Amino acid sequence: MHVSKPLSNTPPYPFLELRKLANNLREQGISVIDFGIGDPSSPTPDFVIQAAQKSLQEKSKAGYPADFGNQDYLQACADYLKKNFQVELDSKTEIGITNGSKEAVFHYAFCHLNPGDIAIVPTPGYPSMKNGTIFAGATPFYVPLKEENNFLIDYQAIPEDIVRKAKIIWIQYPNSPTGASPSLDWYKDFYTWASQNDIIIAADEGCYIDLYFDKKPHSILEVARENIITFYSLSKRNNMTNYRIGFVAGDEKLVQLFGRLKSNIDSGIIDCAQDAAIAALRDDNHVQSMRDEYREKKEILLDGFRAVDFDVREPDATFYIWQKAPQGMTGVEFAKKLLEKDLAIVCTPGAWISQDDFLGQNPGENFVRFALVPTKEEVKTAVERLKNFY
Image 1 (tube, helix red, strand yellow):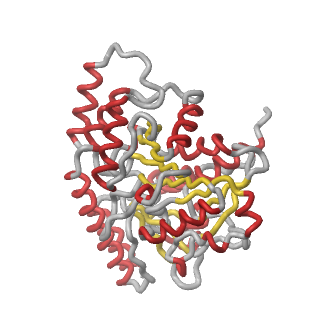
Image 2: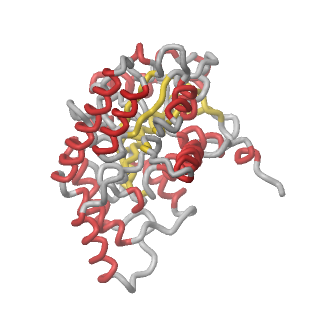
Image 3: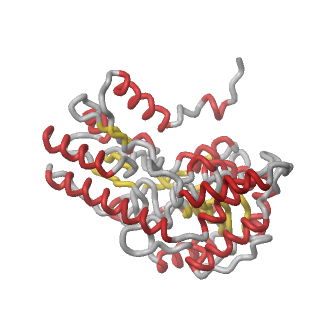
């Protein structure tokens, strides 16, 4: 069987490996506490489910949905951006629907990149950024997110020959896995640099932008929209991972180009998911309760790390903890240690979601990622196991 080069050169999606490891423990009858995959354990809010049910009943005879989103959904997205970031966009031209973020981030590379082109990609980072680049036949240039830079991409350190060739630069803030979130001044300087070098900014910002612990994160659209496209998802904001819905927003020419690509890939998103998303976007109360819940779980886990003398860093946003492995251990070694039967704690080795950067170093080598998705009681249990073990 012939397999395409991009697929044959792509390792299994890292989170599939985590599921296997966790399932192996469960098959042995061991109670596993799984911080590995960022899939919320809390249910979708009832009012969102009710909106989906009502839509299914009312639109049971509907045909294909609109390729790039129903107008009432797109307007709800525009209203959300105006309410939360004071960004006014035209819902008919500057916003389009997506199947969550994953497919959109992956496919966006096909809008601009040809074989031999370069996209600048942060490492660690969401795998779809580099995978989409590779499948488009282009080359990712990996720039590390380092603690000494507060995990902000050091665009000034990118070699000039790469800057001249690059078509796209990817950023993801609030950042998975580091939890970093830039200031508005940083966004302004970054946008100036990208504009001067005629590089499109692809910002995967909307998955975690509403999940923060102190200061509310900014959107890069507060700075400008020309040559910027942003990616949003309701998966984490609204516990709607299985609805597969989100949107792109920004520069009209970029959004419409993506819509042209998307119309050749799928036939739109089911109406009931769009109607459920409208209800979700209009409500902020449940999002605040989620922020409170994640803050509680973060404090429980970090206090547990402090109790066993782990080096601790507070994240700005997301529901992730980017944790340094204990002295003398790599992230992979630490993650394997946590899988011992007395601990049975699953986390993600940083090296699994990082690439070697342009200097040949893996910035995730000594880290692991904890997703704060277990219940509060499970987080407490994990802390007790750590204290008993260490």
